[in-house]
Length: 140
Image (cartoon, rainbow, N blue to C red; front, side, top):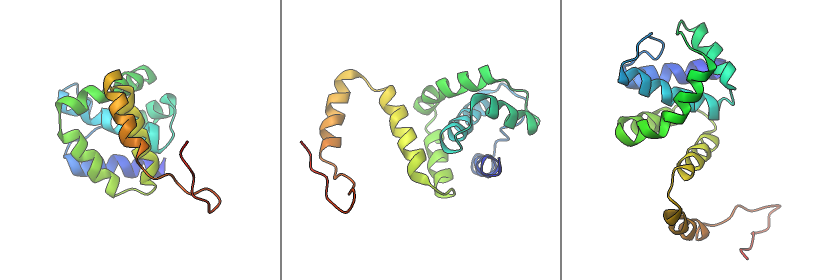
């Protein structure tokens, strides 16, 4: 919970929006979606944990709302470019960035068109692979 509180504080500081305010205005919903994404993939919180986190901070919330918020994250990213800026700035302030970056990449892949996946695969195939046991991995 300590890491979750840090992330929430960073997002509130960066955006100037109180994610725990009981409001359905778009700006609040979008920022909560960002926080939910980060809680789910950085803090490995279940939807019930996310619900409990919001409730403990005074926000009316349930696990179904958390699921919807996570599903809507991509839509919010596409129409509000500040979401990506807030994500990047928050990422600078937290530890273990690689895990959250991988989660975002996987999320983006889930919403990528099939024809674009082939193009993406060509790019990814050119990336160097991580060493395992000190030996360079070979591509097939």
